[in-house]
Length: 284
Image (cartoon, rainbow, N blue to C red; front, side):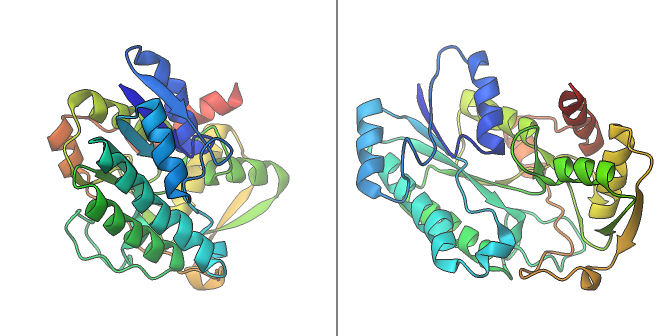
C-alpha cells in the first residue's frame, strides 16, 4: 500500500511520520509544498500515477483562523479547492482520501455535543472554507473519509499547549477565556486512529474525533501549568468579549465521537491523560 501524506511538516503529519514505521507493509510519501504543490491539479495527478498512490491522508490546510479573515482567497485555495483536486485525482485511480476538517464548520451555539449529521453553520472564513472543502471532497471522491477534529496540539509545531507553557514561564499573570467550551485533541491520538482506520479498511463518511471529556480554554491552561510544574503564574478567567479577535470562535464545540468509536471499534483517551503524555515528552 502506497500512502501519500500531505502537509506532513505540521502537527498531525509529523505524528503520522513518527508512527509510520509500525506499519512495515506500507510505503509512505511524506510531502509538503516543496515536494508537492496541492494547489496544482496536474502536479497531483502526476505524483499519484508515478508513485502508484492508493490512499491520501490530507493534513494540509490554512489554519491561521484570524489571518483567514483578511486572506480569504488563499484560505479558500488551500482549504476548499486543493482538497477537491486531491479527491478528483485519487478517484481517477480508484483510491481513497482521508481528509481532516474542523469543529469550525459549526457555529458553536449548541449545548449538546455535535454529531456528524447536525446542521453546519460556520461563522468564520476559516470555517466556511473548510466546509466547502468537505463538500468538494465528498462530491469528487465518494469513498472519502472526513474527520472533523478540534483544539489540536502536539510536541510539534506551534500550538496552545506550547504557547501556554512558554508564557507561564515568562509572565506572572495570564488572561485566558473561560466561556468557550470544547475538547483538546492530542495529534498523536488522532494519527493512531487514522492509521487504525486504514488497517481496518476505511468506511466512507464524516466522523468526529477529539479526546474524551470537556473543558474550557481556562481549564485547559490551568491543567497545562499543573502538569508542566508551573506554579508562579496566575491564570485570570476572561469573557470572550474581553479578548476580541478578527474571527469568531465557537462558544461550544464539543464533538460527539460515538460514530467513529462504534464504526472502527476504538477507545479514545481522556484529554488530561493524553495531555500528560505530551507534556512529559516536551519535558524530555
